[in-house]
Length: 302
Ligand code: CP
Ligand code: NVA
Image 1 (cartoon, rainbow, N blue to C red):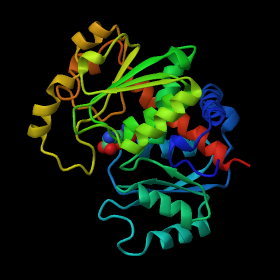
Image 2: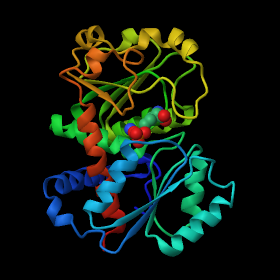
Image 3: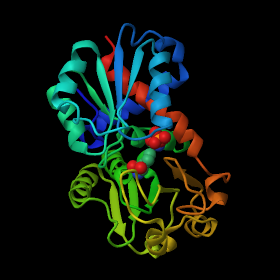
Image 4: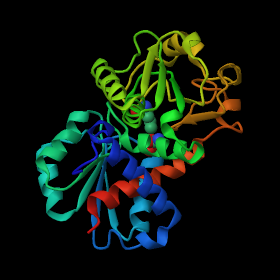
């Protein structure tokens, strides 16, 4: 493993090992206090962030490393100087690059032109750190991830793509329900279905909310992602039937609700569900740091 650009690049054993290491770091943080001793990580963010920025900064600190945040929110990377020069220059000083970008191709360019590991902190296509934290969270509630029945309801987006690859590689069952015109990327669907077939998982896609059968957990995300200029009124009209409500949770028998956050209560899910007893949102948020620290230790520790 040289980078973390997408969960699809991980083998099943690499993914399982990352989740195990994340649990180990979470339960024995003192043993990893110097894991990144002398290492510096540069963080480039073209988009806003709470969880990702804070969990990387504090996580790197807990591993004994140093992190530097470079604010790119006033313009996409590559405007003042080429992305390739960014990557090659940062590689002169830093030991890794964490990047949140609009275009996934920017992350790929950083990896291509730099000489240090690159970690995708969200692009238009993927959110692998989120996916890792989500499967870590599920693994704390279910003994065998291959038996988990997870559903994703809402906009087919970067988070959906990472969940699809993760579930497929782990051999889990994932049902993705999105309105027509808002399905996940076609190539991701084909690749995730092939991975699910290889690992004994199941990936179902539908635009009919009634195709949701018995579920263990229901996951949703914002209906309008960063960089998407859709009008909320138009989206609300189209996505109304896909709101995650207590009724939907009851009908499907889902005990757990998941969301990567930020959540818009009363839009993609009701406040009752987001803040309800079965909501795992803060477990997911906490696990961002542990999952990312497992990635950092795997990529950087001596
Ligand atoms: N879930 C997530 O990535 O949150 P932020 O956008 O706040 O980093
Ligand atoms: N799909 C959302 C995730 C935010 C963490 C977005 O890209 O804005």
